[in-house]
Amino acid sequence: MRTVESVSRAPSIVPGARTCTFSSGDLHQILNIVRTVHRKGAAKWLQGVTKRSPRTVKYWLADEYAPRGGDALAIARALRAELGEYLRQLQQFEFDLR
Image 1: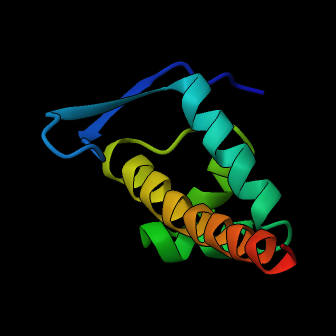
Image 2: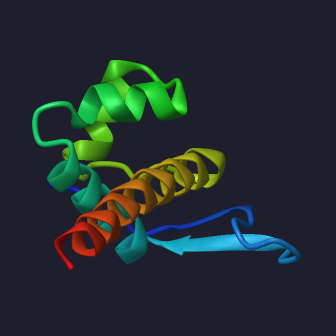
């Protein structure tokens, strides 16, 4: 298996910052979170978020290649929005239990 050693740059997800840099470790961690949240549908979810081909997404999930630039940013933004919604639901659940 080939190891991915790269750094991806994209517009920042933080307002006011110039660029966002993802190391290969960051990208692998983000893909692991995607695999955890979307156990059976990770490939479909990544295709929907990035508009990439099934073949490209399979390479990402097999850790042969990593998403770059705008794709990495799109994945991070979509995952952050989705996890933020889960957090809000959990907070509401805790509030309802009080």
